[in-house]
Length: 334
Ligand code: SAM
Ligand code: SF4
Image (cartoon, rainbow, N blue to C red; front, top):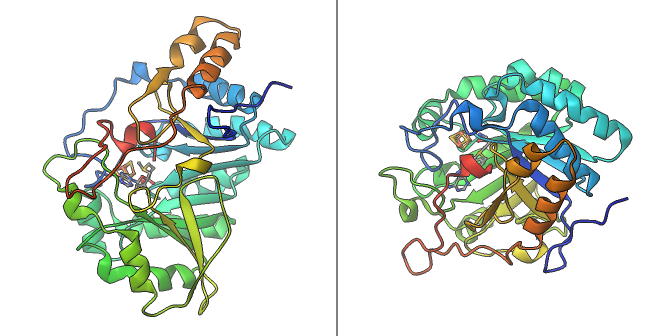
């Protein structure tokens, strides 16, 4: 048994979020500019390397693995990778294998994901209006995503919807989204827009809708009870007393919860980011490729975690964007 991964602030690292591609079939306006340049394929970790990376982390105590991107389901043969992870679920070393997706390819992959051992997924969906959906994702089609969600539920996947709260965009859909999720037995989490990456001419401050305000709006119609549920992440949950529905709030801007952070992120090129909101990172691809033994990789992982910062510095409170990080969310994986 290897020593657990503990960072300098005594936080135990048990959750790995892995980006398997920086590519995407959408161009959400808060995430990417329309003319994104993507990495050359040769820079990406191969499917075998992704497997070895995850297997090493699992051997060091990671219990939960979330696959993200870019859009993870556009990576060619990604199901081969998921199928490989099934052995860690079967052995009990890994407790949960999950993914965050835009839903566009779910109709095709839902059954195979379930067969690989995935039981819960997060689908990002900011609006239920087809025109607005096309506008916010630039290239996405709502009907395709809704068919994907339906397919996922039909095979037994539990779906949680993630919606970015966007001023002037989905404010008027707050109750529609909540009702729709309740009706379809889905949890719903709102996310504050974070200052990550150059997004062309879009206006960050203009996009920002504080979840404090969103919650106050919900409370005009619902009784909300704070829940103690914690996932080691930034989400905090309430129960809607009228429907029993669970609603989450990810509030990196209006209230951060870095003190209980249990996660690290790996990009599709094998960089480890120990904080979503800081530039600091370390290369794991070099150590992984340097030897057939996992020892150099394990040393590099421990070194990176011994440097995990206390928290991010995102801040809009002075009416300007502070703490911006230059990389896109699709690079680190959301
Ligand atoms: N393509 C997949 C998807 O959209 O679910 C997975 C990757 S995406 C980067 C993960 C999450 O990050 C999505 O829920 C997306 O809405 C969110 N996201 C992207 N850019 C963001 C930003 N600047 N601030 C807050 N959330 C963001
Ligand atoms: Fe693609 Fe997800 Fe970014 Fe939208 S949020 S552009 S779906 S990676």
